[in-house]
Image (cartoon, rainbow, N blue to C red):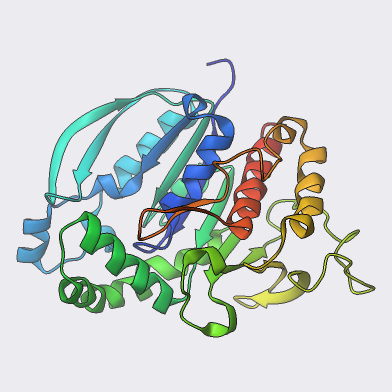
Length: 310
């Protein structure tokens, strides 16, 4: 490769929405230009062994972190890897897969920021932090529909994993350039994911787009559905961009244009009507829905990946 790949990290607990987020980003770049890696494939033990040992997949000791480090190094250098594959349906390992890095590499999983060497491999780091009640709902829906568990089994698994989530997964939030939290309005249980708001914590670890010309204290002509403010996260000052699920297309268009005008390549994807892949959500009934908060989040991350090329 003439240029090294741009690597995006997407870290969060199980069923936090990592795959939904990355799907739209991959569609923006074109799937032929993106390699997606899941660090959850690097488990040291299969499901039966974990049950016998009393260890969860969230624990660092249950994962080959050193091999993840090595593979991230190789990918960053443009070299291929032989990636393990963990089969979530069977709980066992399938034959490994030969993976070549494309122009953009998305690395998603539970423990992607666990070591400094891993963290140093990414150009952009994101962390997904939905409310635990919402994540529980997503996990129950996913694991019962796709992985053959009962509701009771999923809830019991969450209960057993909670100490490891608290000890090993959530602390990785502090390493992210952007913390992404989709949440229901008024803390009510959402009727569908289309109505979710998003709160984007933008840390000064990378330069974010300047939204202050259209979102500021003197007046926000976009309406109350889109807000920009200052806050503190983990005791450090951050910018916070919030977009409500009921924001209209007209309200989000100006933010979209700001992102797309600054990065020319992104411009051809900046039509929330024309690009049907960005912001799409597959509902529990199988219906394809369009979320403007999700679309803007995906475009913002894409913006940062393109800026990393410069």
